[in-house]
Amino acid sequence: MQGMTLFLILIVPTIILGIYAQHKVSSTYNKWVKMPSRGRITGREAADAVMRKAGVTGIEITETGGHLTDHYDPIRKRLVLSSENYRGTSLAALGVAAHEAGHAIQHKVGYKALKLRMALIPVTNIASQMLPFVLIGGFVFGMLGLIQLGVLVYLVLTIFQLVTLPVEFDASRRAKQELLAIGIIDRDEMVGVSKTLNAAALTYVAAFVASLANLAYLFLLSRR
Ligand SMILES: [Zn+2]
Image 1 (tube, rainbow, N blue to C red):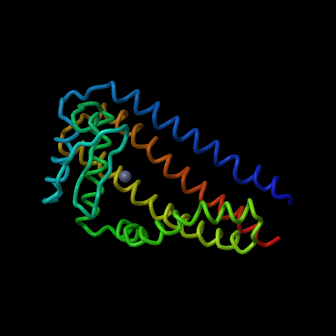
Image 2: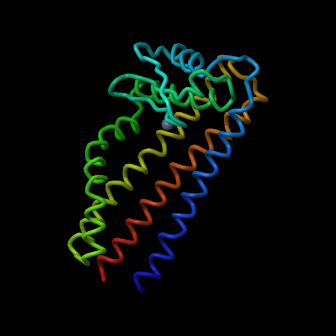
């Protein structure tokens, strides 16, 4: 098959999926961020309550700028929430805050997929930094050796994205379970939390599919 045909079959659909996932996460978040929870608890308070119930201590909860910049930093033991989710009481804010608290719980209980993901970060960072040079050298200058190196780079990235999936799904599962168990939200409010977290999960699935497709594409090119 021609390189262009392979590109159209393998890469173009993943680009479309990626755009769809980004659109879906922002439209879903924008919808549920306008829906306040009845309990009027902020994301910060929810993250704190979820961690406290699980016996997670010594994690600092901080506020950051930007849109959907929320994350758990296992190295600094810090739970970082964007202002909308830190101060907000929306179903979206509670979902995201509890999800990040779910990562802190994973860290405390030694959840295996999280450990593996953390161990893969250094090699994944190297692979990401090599990627532009490998692709430019491989495609613009037609250097076959670099295409073969690209296969290795995408193999690393694909494994990382694959390990990320259970970590993300598990954090969302813990978030939903604890928000209900603690009584931060009522069962009929769960739809807003679930839809927000499911849309976020789709972006991780899209990233994995894109890596896998790029891996297959470069592998097939390198064999010609
Ligand atoms: Zn997450």
